[in-house]
Image (cartoon, rainbow, N blue to C red):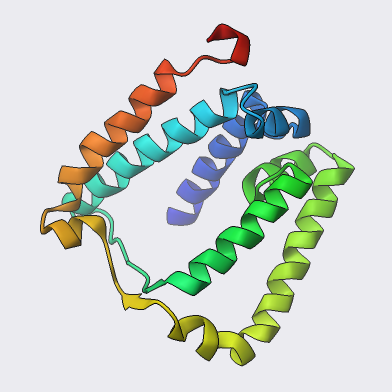
Length: 176
């Protein structure tokens, strides 16, 4: 049942990506240039709804949020790789898969490059693990944990803020 639910939700997510134009290189680069806010609005809405939904499910005992340890150097390296890949290809992993499913060759190159990069990292990780994990290692850190409140108390106002921003942003630069 969980696999079927995952398939349905994954298909719905892919459909939303495709219908919003997130699988379009042009639309993605225009979002990065702050000329078209459609994808930014989609991301803000997804973060807001996801933040509230996951924390609500966790509060009801229907989900189990597992926090990974905070490794600052690892996060900085991953952010740099992700950002450069997004800027060069015009796709993030999800939008690259949606565009590849549409048969776009540049998206296939991005997907294959991502898989190759993941394989290289997997093989190199034992060699660099100690270095990556030794600098800026803080353990399981959360904002709500640091403030001493339940996650839902932060998720609702922050998620609502993201949803509000999604509705407030114009679709195109000229609309401002």
